[in-house]
Image 1: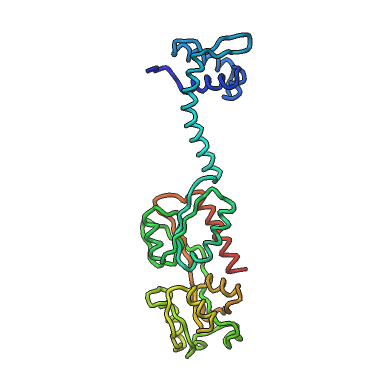
Image 2: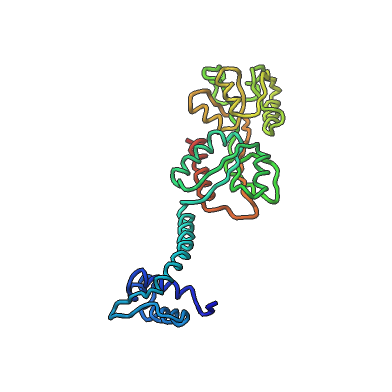
Length: 302
């Protein structure tokens, strides 16, 4: 083994082979001509044979130099590929983003953000899983997902939970419904009305029940479903009225499929962002979050 052989000597040899001049090789390597000449001389000394014939300002590779260059190129192809990958990652031309989201955001809101993100960063592969808020938390606990979007009241040491949007629930009514004449709906407005409720296992259901109980309202529950989008579909079909989280309600209202009204007293609602506690968010994840924040402002305030 040639203990005095250095990577820098090989770089100098490769640069001279490719440029045909020591001076040009020095420019490529960002060093001086004497430095390159010394590295070549040291390499020849270590190798025990000549690599170049010196003719005036030209250097002519020997047959041994050509044989060595073939092997050097094979090694440097690997280095070039590594360099390319590093540049791709740096410039967002390569990478992945694993996202888990509650259905209220994963069915429409997050796909819209993903479409915008991919348009700007086509080299990033995005994976989206639609899961319950509790399942989203479990995905983040595994540390294999980059971002989670949920509504939770519990924490886990492996997950950082922060509010990304704090807002309030909305009443949803069929287009042309009599309650649409009111600017704000109160608990007693729902009394005896056909009402589509969230399933009893959904956390928001108890909060909605508490809101209705303020005025002793007794809506006529005609259906129970798990997803706010399913509720909005039923409301838009004229089946009944309901109270749902604001993102889904706003999407349906903007499409002209139903009418929304604020509640009094307000029923708070919060969307959480979950990130792995054991590692910092990637640059791609941080960039995606900025788009999410802007999207919330656009949807709920626009």
